[in-house]
Every structure is written in structure tokens, then in C-alpha cells.
Length: 130
Image (cartoon, rainbow, N blue to C red; front, side, top):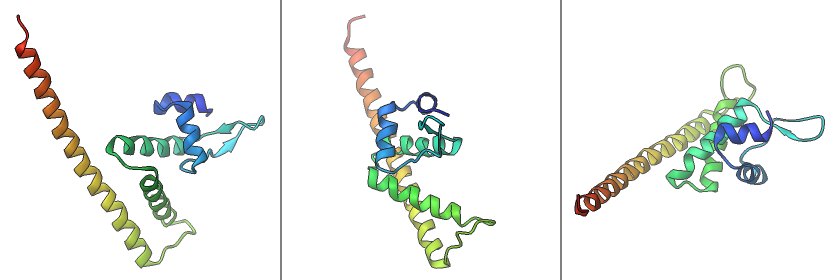
């Protein structure tokens, strides 16, 4: 699919998708005969991971580290040639688990902030004349 469809599916601006390409977070899987980048569903899924990490405050380096870890683990699945040593596999799994734990903690923080914001909005409503 072309970048415009990817942008619509991911709700990311074209410019942002191109920035992710430039910094190597996502690489289009193919090119059209005219040389335009083409994306697969896997590329879209990768962009969605990046998009979901943003509001949780993960930076580009953290995003790159997580994606690299997930890619290495996926390459280690049965039927692939990317066999990992057990120690490397364990380290990658531990790294992904740390990201999952960090994401869970950040979601909890955001929920607490949202609750406070809702309470504030409600307190303003209660001060208005009826």
C-alpha cells in the first residue's frame, strides 16, 4: 500500500512516517515501479507500535531498542534461520518484559492524571451558575 493509505490507517501524518523511515524505525517493504515506497500490513503494525509508544513517553532510542528486540525474537521462531543463543534470547525477553512493565506503570500514571483532570473539570462546572 502507498504511504497515503498507511497514514490513513495509522492516523500518522505523512511527514511523521517519513521521519520514522529516515531514522530507520520503519523501512518500506517494497517499491512501486515508479520508485515510490510500498508498505505491507507488517509495516503498518510496526508503525502502530511506534504510535502507541509515543503517548507513554518512550523516546526514539527506546522505541528502536524495543523494536530491535522484538525483531530478533521473531527471527528466532521455529522455522526461521535466526537461532539465538539461550542467553541472548533470555536477555531479549527480559528487555521486552521491562518495556511491558514500564508501559503498564506509565498507563497507570496517565489514568491518575486523567482522574485529576476530570475532577478539576467537574469542580469548575460546579462553580458555574445554573
